[in-house]
Image 1 (tube, rainbow, N blue to C red):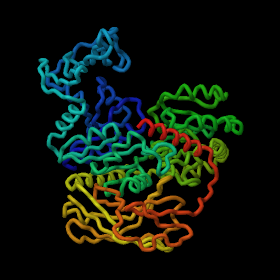
Image 2: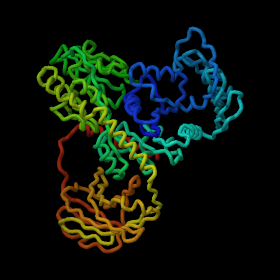
Image 3: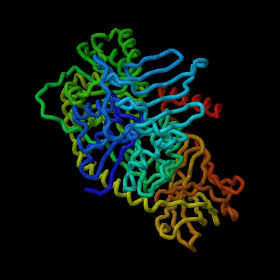
Image 4: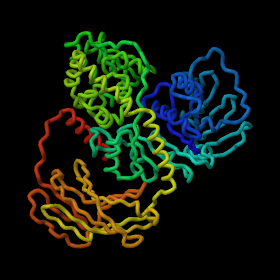
Length: 627
């Protein structure tokens, strides 16, 4: 038993939620036996949290060792609270019942009929003037004033306990009070909680960010634009003691693009441990379990099924999930005349049952950081047909061995693959047998051990955070010929502690300006004095460089710290402009770069990716214009 606490931070926990919430709760349960305390921290106001936690207890995801800490539960907590009698006959949840008094106030009730939040409005302009949060016994414990903005924390007698200028202030106070000078590890499971975690100053607390989704926008290629909510994390990775991805491929991409730190780790989600069941599957049933949202591209599966039923009339598709797109799917099903073949089933907690009944499952996502549904389906022996998107599908599925991959956006290919698997029972059984081996690769014990190692490394890392005030680099020699490029140079550090010098790692980085690519070559280093590092190295694989202009940078890593530098050139280049049929070394002011002239390799035209790239280009232009 480790003598420190581990907390997972989420915006909220609700009964009907997607894979990220379920994954965080499963992880907490898996690790609860290893630590002094394991808890989930939430930041929304939900007076019915007791009912939500009970729900997760009933479906087996929660246990008594997991603690739930909510900022508003903390603010209202006082001893000897006598609950107010509920309104008779009310079974509605807080989300479902509220009373609006026009231009005066809005009252939110909990599922027992007790008023829990009252918002007052200005009679003249209709804008909110103040908000009162109410405890079970009817007392106000937090008063929010809007003009001017302030937050007042009240005791039972209405006396001010503490005032806060911003929401951020009372969230930070909540976390500091929870940690209470103990050693702890806090994991941010959503980008909403990154900012909260980064703002808490506590030397006894290790900070970890966990990625549950692709960090990039469409078309989800290496150099694609960052998802906006990820900008804070990737701009301030130096502030975290660990950053955890779900696949090695995503970790590698993040390291190459944003810096090869030793604080980047990988661990996936555990596979289901299937129950023994004699329930037979339906050889003509396919299933999908996914959020009803655009990124899942569920209409692709519905359109593909129109082709499927022409060859396999008895084929059926069940689509389980929740979300705003449901009405669109139903409309599409009706328009395509698939009412007897495709069914929108809604949300289910019986994940195993849904997969067990099916011949195979489908995933048509634009992107998946991992794809819990892949592991869940495979662990039961239900093969997966999946678009070959980054990251999970191409990492977990070996095409033709334990599942089937289809070119993203290829609806005809998706249909043909389904038809083949409906018809070919032998192939389906072979895939099923191999798919079940995922329970060994993603066994809970193996992943728990991996998590324990990551958390222990993060705990140690918090005591050796590297903060470097200033770094300068220059090339003292650059030689170029048809064999490659050879460099020598030096780096001056201001603020690097002596204890961390041996942890400093340097790479030569070549970065393509358009359609970003990164190529690395290791550098040899030697400390000339406490603040001066001498480096040298070469890059001889010029054939790897595609057409375009490549910047020559130095990648500097030291534990959590990383920085890319474009060194200044202090001496003339040897071999500058030397004839080379494909590559030339150029100078731009005080810097050097490579220009590659060889023709591009022609690739087969892909209409789906062409459209995705075009939409991404328009999106980025609009965004840049606004900025």
